[in-house]
Picture 1 (spheres, one colour):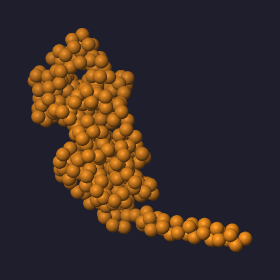
Picture 2 (cartoon, one colour; picture 1 turned 120 degrees about the horizontal axis):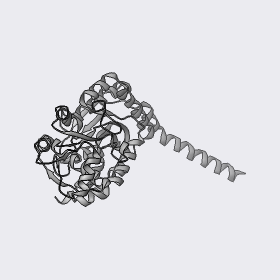
Picture 3 (cartoon, helix red, strand yellow; picture 1 turned 180 degrees about the vertical axis):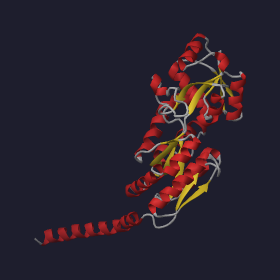
Picture 4 (cartoon, one colour; picture 1 turned 60 degrees about the vertical axis):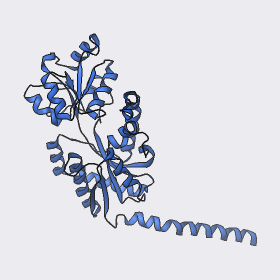
Length: 329
């Protein structure tokens, strides 16, 4: 009997010690946040990414009743920002404004990459996606994506497409589209998106896939012809231009997505609080109007969506990105 009593006491003591050990962590989660939160942004202050990040910081901060301080850490394709975040504890007080570049593309551009996005981060919430539009020089006579495909298949490598630079998303969008459609065009990189658009308008190149905000004035003036929108759905600004998935071309819904991420291992309760606070960003009429003027599409969803899209895009785009050998150029 005494033996059983001793065992019972040992079990009870172990349980008590376990509860006591968990108590500080549970209290920390319950009291979160009780100090300012850092939001690290890999772009310079004043750009579109920085603007979206600051809108999230303002509205999520109010929802959390906490201060969210934006810190800009540009350089090295976002690697500097990543290292800043991963050097901190997984406690929800250091977050990152992460996008497709840091979470997907860097893996194929920087080798060896000093982090593994799928293992080192966990998602907080999706914020936005930037739509692209494939446009053509009017002299090509192309009025639709089907027109382009028919010509390109009949004349392989006779069409040139512009981009904002080697490895830029404006190149990757067309490279991935080519692979899906079974066509081949010649890539001509320029020193920025405006130069590529000008080349397409001038006939040096025949097609390009700039972001809609850049292309829209030239579409309206008739200097380029829109063929397809690389976005989840048709855009109000271009109601007659089909989205890629309408034409059976999949995996182009979130070409320029962004969201909030933090270090893997952050307690689920804290992630849930941050995701709930993200709803204040998405539900704000002020935010929605600002995004509309920026021609940026809001993306709301559970915290898990960020890593799901990261894994999806890495798997879908990886084979094509590897063939481009971007890290060796």
